[in-house]
Structure formats: C-alpha cells, structure tokens
Length: 100
Image 1 (tube, rainbow, N blue to C red):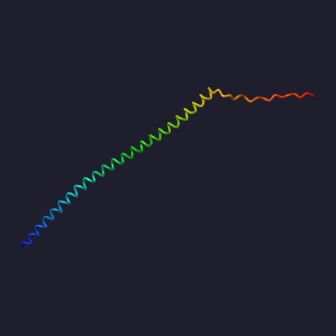
Image 2 (spheres, helix red, strand yellow):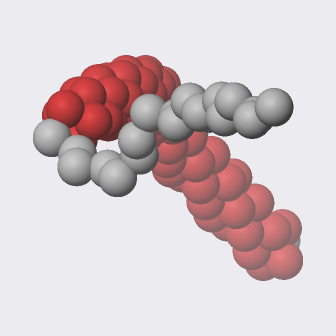
Image 3 (spheres, helix red, strand yellow):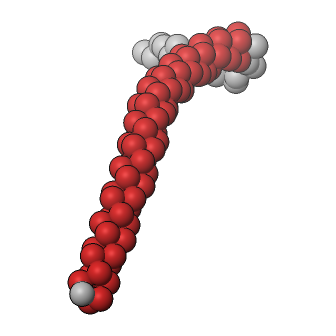
C-alpha cells in the first residue's frame, strides 16, 4: 500500500505541474501574440511612411531636374547675350571684272 500511496502522490504532483506549465504557456502565448500584433501594426505604418518618403524624394528629384533645366536655359540665354564671340558674318565674294 505504501507503493500505491507514493504512486498517487507522484501522479498528483505531475498533474499539478502539467496544469501549471500549460497555464504559463498560455499566458506566454497571449503576450507573444499581442507583441506580434503590435509589431505588425508598427511595420505596416513604417512601410506607409517609407512609401511616402520615397514619393517625396521622387518629387524633389523631379523638381530639381526641372529647375536645373530652367537655370541652364537661363544661363545659355545670358551667356549668348553677353558673349563676345569672334564669329563674323560670312564674307561675300567680290566679283572681279575681267579686262578685255
């Protein structure tokens, strides 16, 4: 009978340990799932912000390209206006009359 009492005590302690372990695992899973949900929200918001920043950078790049073209064309006009190039009008050929 002593062995039967030891077996019952062992099974009772083992059952209590399994139930406590199961409860602890459930609590940990609850916290892990809530953390994963928060991480998912943060990552989706981060992705939206990264897309918005990429669009802003593309718009800024296009603006810089357009402004640089305007500045270049303005510079060309100003440099052509004040250039002292030595190009002359083409000379006309003088016709020489032949003596007869």
